Amino acid sequence: MSAYDPSNIFAKILRGEIPCTRVYEDDAALAFMDIMPRTDGHVLVIPKVAARGILDMPPEALGPYMQAVQKVAAGVKAGMNAEGLTLQQFNETAGGQVVFHLHFHILPRWEGVAVRPHSGAMEKPELLEGHAKKIRAALGV
Image (cartoon, rainbow, N blue to C red; front, side, top):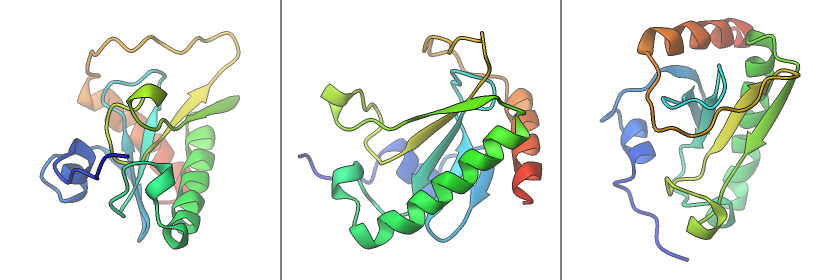
């Protein structure tokens, strides 16, 4: 397994070097809108611990992080009035990981609405903020 690279984009977001549309934050995690969403309301949840993937996340930090993932998932489902959720987590290049900082994708889902293909197109900031506002309201933050 390769070493954690502190210059990855999520580490830069955690340090405040790159902006994001925040949804939720606690001592263990930061949740923000994916700028290239595959569904409306697509959120990423990253740990504040420097972990490349799930296998090198310290066990004592995993519990609080997963509690944050669960809380944000509930907020995404409620805030986006979704009928279901898809959670994705990838590890290493062969597993589909692109950013090498542990993260979960939370995608709200609706019957008959397909996940959009990853086009690389960035969403309009005002649309992301509108979705984030709904999710934050559902989370009470």
